[in-house]
Length: 300
Image (cartoon, rainbow, N blue to C red; front, side, top):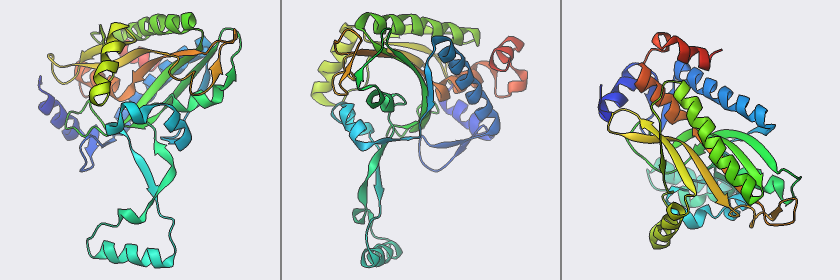
């Protein structure tokens, strides 16, 4: 099995994932979920060693927080907006009339006070407005996230789990967290038997301005990714990333380090679903047949 389509079919036939009729949105089996939980636990252990504040966020984020992340300017094509009904009885009757007639009724909804979460770390930054303690702050955060990237590639989901180890402090401390943290994370994934390669990368910024932003990100080596094959030996996929944000979040959220300067941040982000899929592709679709050392690492 060395083909993306074959791998996706095998995942469905083995009932590890369940299609929902929407590309990139699948249900997960108990066996799949057990692997994902074990990966979260491994990241949580690292967070404990760092003395990080551990938080599990919901898959939605405050609208004002989302606006200050600059995500709208950088990735408008990936955003998911939540809409709600706030009308009266007359509006409800019109909604029902259109629905029963098979007509559009979404214009009767209003934007909610929340967006679908695009990254697990976004709710952290408003928590840090003001001055940080000496040595900065570590956060160990995870949540389901959404990005509008419909695809039949099993490794490219619209709804997916992210687990991030975030640091906010001085530029030097943030850089150190990114570099040492990515090395630690890649080493952990290699212990799970995955063939890892670290490459320079950039985010998929939108539009003409996005091209310049992506080039700058690569020139300054702000983003590194750990890749491994999923579904095909010729198809390396990013399953972990190390990101230097500079003052991208410190400035809009008015966060300063202990020396009074605008804080910098960095994160090491585990793509939990992609790592789970990489393990199934590498070791087989039955976890009971995985190498004993891999199982011992996941379930000590």
